[in-house]
Image (cartoon, rainbow, N blue to C red; front, side, top):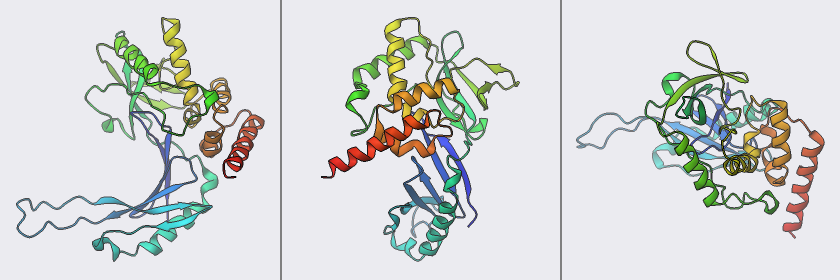
Amino acid sequence: MALDLYSRLDLQPFHGLIQWAVGDGLRALSLDGEHWRLQLRAPAQPRPWGALDQTPSEPRWHDLGDWSPTQGLQLRGLAPELAKLQRQGQAEALVAELAARLDQLPFPRRDLHELWLCDDQGEPLALLASGDSAEQLPTRPLFWRPLYEAPGEGEERAGLLSPEAVAGLTDAVRSRARRRLCRALQRAGAALVDAEGGVVSAPELPLCESWPTEPIARQVAHYHAWHAPWLLQLHHLSATTRARLEQAACQRPWLVAALHRTWPVIIDAERITAARVEARLREGVESL
């Protein structure tokens, strides 16, 4: 089975990149490059007889099962009208091709068109949305949404990112962008360019790091440090920024172990290896 391999940002709120492996009527998605959710595109079903709206329904993606190199393929039950599809053989073909191409992780990013919320002077402030083309970007202004950590994703020494701190960041962004101006830009390597091809001065990370007051600047730095394991999935980071984020990510060893295969570059391999070893040791202790 021929697969189209790429990645896309997971935004609003930001949660790194999703890896995509798309075949004919099947696809697999992963946040970490290890655990994959398989989905089946089912044909449109006819409307029941007598329904007022006889417009054919659109094909939909249905969860087919899960796969990882260590746990293998686990299919789940589907609705009776889908069970007759040859899903077992299709899923096995997709998994076989995907397994042979895992060494290509992380897959190249496809959604290179970005929508940025700007401050009241028109300078990019926070990343709002992305798309494979400019036409896929939202046309209505959006509010920036921060990322709350999910339960269990924290390490004590990483420092809590409290709801109060995140709410403070949200207020700061909205205060600086009262006009809700937005700009559509295109990612070109490490740069962002406008519709005319001119390079635009924009933040390297999804939220601007330059703030007029020290307390807000510290909150932004803490916000980025907390989400370093996901930020390291970005392809365009400078070596200096990547090294800083690697140091912060190692405060959360199990996320380093989970996500390192989706990082396009590793600066301090020795540090990252040590964090992965620590994660394995912790997992062993907790299983006793």
